[in-house]
Image (cartoon, rainbow, N blue to C red; front, side, top):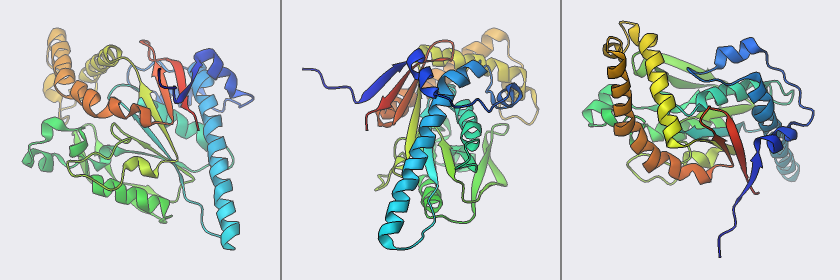
Length: 309
């Protein structure tokens, strides 16, 4: 006897209808500004997939506020609302960064929660010098390469309503945490946390807490590995023609390779680092997500799975 599926499954057409009357408050210029490298996300994709998702999340936020008000009534006092935290996980090159930025814009257009912040876990990577000393530089992006204690402390402070928090920022140009540069977070209505391993505890040492313990809602961006590898190689080639050409880029040495050498290098990095991380650490956490976005080979979402509550 097969086990029941814990998720409700929606085709693209079925999910699109759940938009109801939600207006599209996003212009093409705004979408172009947040679109990732080599991603083809369109306004139609936003209408079909991300508007219904923003409506669902708005309902979740409202329900969470209702629970807060019930607690306030019980306690006979007024306590500050904790920010609603959304976790977004998935492989390198799966498109989770673009999805996070699109959701940040859409959610900020709802009147009840206009202040939406986006934080990536890249800023919580250990500096390259620390990783190199520990022999972990080639495992950057694996759970043990993150300062889990700092990340958990940040999330605890967000939920506690700290008035101002500073988050380390990461530079993809130098491939390292940017020294002395921080993102300032001031009591957002919603915080989106995007990263490879946000649905697990990570780290080499066991922890009593999971990062996901602080999430009110979580999303996993899924696709077949063959498609993600192709997207990764395409992105690598684009970076070789743009960012990597900058002399200050950590990967400047790749810019002068031939086309075949670039493709071989990208595939080598994928199979040595990103594929093992996906198989060992990232994909096994997929079923912990409240919602799974399944992408087809063209980067468009073909199916949505929503966990039964």
